Every structure is written in structure tokens, then in C-alpha cells.
Length: 236
Ligand code: ADP
Ligand code: MG
Image 1 (spheres, rainbow, N blue to C red):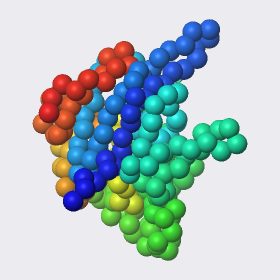
Image 2 (cartoon, rainbow, N blue to C red; image 1 turned 135 degrees about the horizontal axis):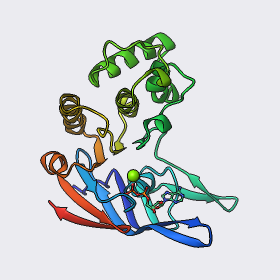
Image 3 (cartoon, helix red, strand yellow; image 1 turned 180 degrees about the horizontal axis):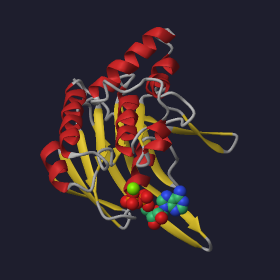
């Protein structure tokens, strides 16, 4: 049987940003392939390019060079001279941004943000989506939370958990999460890690950025270190 394509893959990707007259090279020629059910960890100092790498993996922004593949297909095509995002299906890869407010719509009640990926998939009526949001929030330990609260009424840690609930809501093929446990206490982190184990056991591919190297080594199939835009595997 032919081996299945990685769920997400970057090949030789680089990405830089203009800073005044200078150009910052955030990611340099990175290669990474993540298969079904794998958990891959990435750590590294601030400014080493971790968040940029995750945005490339999630096809949130296009690389300057190299290829991003989702399910073995190019994630970006060009239309009218511009990069055009072309995932296998909506919600195929879900990002959890480092700033949880970036993953949520601040004007919306949280149940709506959590259920939005399901609404886009178009498979459930509104009452069903609200019930599903309650279930997903319960899975991240926010069972008692008011479904109609808005992000500004929550703590950063609660927003992080809402962002994770949203990312997992519509059973994505892959989740890329940028320090999703940074504002959580140890008990809550443990619950979140159990949830990550569970969803990857069900086949989701997960890339996790964290400063907590011990946690990554305990949880992940592979751990990479980033330094000055370069990605290097340090444990398998
Ligand atoms: P990390 O997540 O490891 O802290 P980042 O990927 O956020 O690293 O940033 C890597 C480098 O790229 C940093 O020097 C940062 O200032 C720069 N950078 C990242 N995103 C942008 C952006 N949107 N505009 C300008 N510079 C950016
Ligand atoms: Mg970052």
C-alpha cells in the first residue's frame, strides 16, 4: 500500500519581513512533514521564527520561497498574480494563534466563535451548533462558562482554552497551536495535554509551539528547536 501523504508539510520554506530598510528573515529553508496522529513540538527563544513557521504550516500566510502542502497538495496557487489559499477543504488545518484574541472574534459570544468552523462546514443548524460549542468548551474544562460571554469578559487563559475548543470543533485534519498553554495553571495544562493526546489518537496531526521543553519531550513524537529562523530536529 502506498504511504499516505503527510497531513501538513513545508519544503524549503523561507519567510521574511520588511523592517524599515532592513529585511528580517524570520524562517530560513525549513522542512517539516507531519503525518496523521503525530504530535510535533517546536521550541526556541523569542524571535527565532516559531510563530512565523506555524503561520506557514497553517497556510495563514504564503512563503517567500519553498512549498506548503496540505494533504499532499499545494496550499497556495496564484490567481491574477496574487497568492490564493487553496486548502483541501475549509477548516482542514486550524491555527491557534499565540494571542488568543487573534483566534476569536471579540464582538461575538464565545459559543459562536467555537461553533464557527462547524457553521462553515454547513452541517448543523444553530441550536445544534450551540450544543456542540457547550460540549467542546466542556472538553477544555470550561463547562460552567456562560456561552454568551464575549472574550473581553474572560481571562487570557480562558480565551486560550476557547481558542483550542474552536480549533478542535470541526474535527480538523491538523491543528497548529502557538503556546496554547502559556497562561494556564498546571492542572489545566494537564487536562489540555490529555485532550491533545486524545485528538491525535483519533488521527489529527498536531504541531505545538511551547517554551516548556520538558512538556514537549513528554508529549511529542518529535521535538524541534528553532534558532535564528532555522529548524533543527533534536529528539525523535
Ligand atoms: P517567535 O514566535 O519565535 O518569537 P516570530 O516568528 O514571531 O518568532 O518572529 C521572528 C522574527 O520575525 C522576529 O524578529 C519578528 O520581529 C519578525 N516578525 C514576525 N512577524 C512579523 C511581521 N508580521 N512583521 C514584521 N516582522 C515580523
Ligand atoms: Mg511566537
